[in-house]
Amino acid sequence: MLVEYYCSESLDRVNHPGMTEPLSYKYLFGPVPSRRLGRSLGVDLVPFKTCSTDCVFCQLGSVDHCTTTRREYVPLVDVLGELERWMAVDGRADYVTLSGSGEPTLHTGFGEVLRFVKRRSDMRSVLLTNSTLLHLPEVRRDAAEADIIKVSLSAWDQVSFEKVNRPHPELNFDRMVDGLRALRAEYCGTLWMETFIVPGLNAHPEEVRKMAAVAAGIQPDRIQLNTAVRPPAEEFVQAVPPEYLQKLAGFFTPPAEVIASFQPGEKAFTLLDETTLSRLIARHPATAEQLAHMTGHSEAAVQNLLAQLGEALSKSERNGEIYYKAAD
Image (cartoon, rainbow, N blue to C red; front, side, top):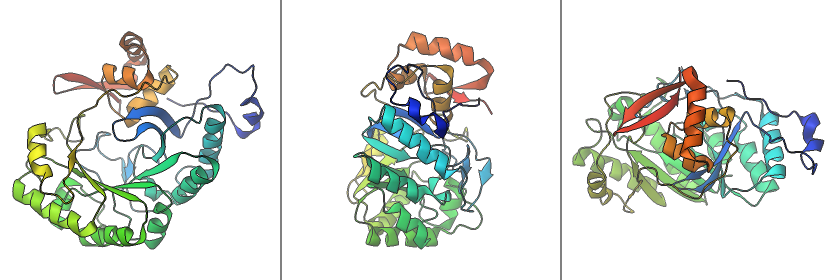
């Protein structure tokens, strides 16, 4: 579904007191309540499912375009224009987060987005990255503009890396870890690490101890354990029980925290229409109840819109709940 947004010539309408028509965006989504970041505005810098890995657990499904090529995937001037308009009209969020449809560091201008947020607002910025391009000095330099960098580590060697993350053939696990260590040495901000536990691939205690040893050499400020709460790319991927994750948490230094399943946070009272809902679902497959909490509207209103979206959505069952995803 094509999302319409105002062009730069319409900026004079932004602060017009009589304007009631809401702005909509192509590269921004939310703000939505995040279990880790409060009220978070997402910035999407690459086309849907464009990434350097094809992780078996990805909630967006299998990758359409697996690449390590860095370029301006979407026009930087348009992204900054949308941010400027959003700041003028709303501008209320705890964080601006570079995430969304794929790996944000593939975009050569991601650092400029972080610098823009820093110059033009008091909001903190977050970079969510799969860690694969941090061996490049220019990527580390731009990443350092973020207040928080959340990196990923769900393997301990090349073989496990290929099984869990299914990286582009050019990627090497040891080189990725070297990039993470270099980032830690150069970066003065807050470094988080997420480890995704997949039964049968990296969930055995000895396997987790190996990942914990790699993580200890990187020295993140926080380590978070995650599992497949939402429907993953591959059907064989199952969720790990919370009590088992709690046992694994002590293997890490500092001890890891278990990221619980979705918990309703502060209601964002997002505009509720088909476009908004479809864009949220495209990046965050969710249940009707979760979508209601994200948007601040009733579950009945969300269900009504879901019915209207019809074939634009697909449904899958996970842990007894129905998750809505964008149709392929």
